[in-house]
Image (cartoon, rainbow over all chains, first blue to last red; front, top):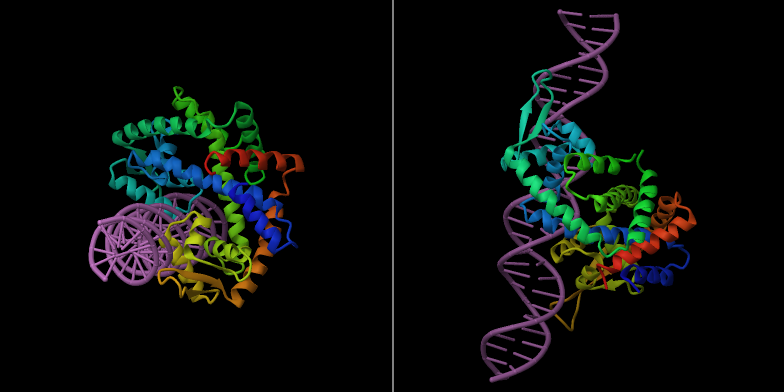
Length: 161
Length: 161
DNA sequence: TAGAGTTATTTTGACGTCAAGATAAATGGA
DNA sequence: TCCATTTATCTTGACGTCAAAATAACTCTA
C-alpha cells in the first residue's frame, strides 16, 4: 500500500461519487518526478549548477561546436518563458560560463556561447549526470525499462508533435 | 522523432562515449510531467487556486470530517518544507478557506481546519479536477493505462516505502 | 522612405519555494 | 524541580519562475 493508494482510498471513502482511477497514475507520476528531480539536483549541485543552469549549458553543449545558440533557440528547447531565460543567461554570464555575443547582422538578436570554462564544466557535469541517471534507473529490469519508456513516449506524443 | 529523441541523437553525436539510454526515459517523464502540471493548473486556477492551495485543501477534505489536520500532518502529505507550508496556510487563511485552531493541550501545535467556504470550494474544485484527470488520461487505452500505472507504481516503490 | 506591424530580448513586480535559523512549548533524566 | 533536549511551527532572506509590459531593431508595403 503506497502513499498514492492511501490517497485514493481516502477519496473513495469521502467522495464515492468520484471515479478517481486516473488520479493514481497521475499522482504516481508526479511523486516519482519529485523524487527524481531531487536526485538529479544533488549531482548537478555538486558542480555548482542548479537544474536551470545545467539545462542551458547542456543544451549549448549538445548543439555542437561552436556551442552557440540564441536565447530564442534556448527557449524553444527548455519549456520556460523568455524572462526566465534572460535571467538564466545572466546568472551563467556572471559565473563566466557563457558569454553574450552580439549578432552584427541583426541588432535585436544575440548568440549565447559557452566559454572554455563553461565547456569544461558541462562536460564534467554531464558525465556525472549520465552516470547518475544510470543509477536512477538501475532498479528497473530491462523489460520494465523498455516498456515504461515506450509507454511514456506514447503518452508524450499526445502533448507534443 | 520526438523532442527527447532529438536530444539523445545530439548527445550521441557530441559525446559518443556516453550511454544516454536512461536519459530518454527520464526526459520523457519530465516533459510529460510539465505538460500535465500545466493542464492541471488551468483547471484548479479557474477556481482561484494554484496547485499549492489546491493540494492543501484537498488533503484536508479527503482526511474526512472534521477536516482538520496539523501543519505537520499536511507537511507529511505534501513533499514541501515547513516554511512553505506555513506560507500556504497563511494564504488560505487570508482567503477565508481555512482557519488555524489552537490546540489547548499542546501550545506548540495547531489544527488547520476547512471553513464552510473552503469545504464548498474544494468539493467543487475536486469534482472538476477529477473530470480533468479523466480527460488527461483518455488518450491512453485501458491496457496502456493499466501497464503504465503498474510500472510507475513499481518504480515509485524504489523511492518510497 | 515613412510608418505600421513584427520579432528578439530584457525589465518589472509578484509569487512560491527552500534552507537555515528563531521561537516557543513540551519532555525526561538527574 | 531544573535544565538540556526535542518537537512544532514560524521567520528570514535568497532564488527561480511567470505574465505582462517595455525596449529596440528589423521588415514590408504603399
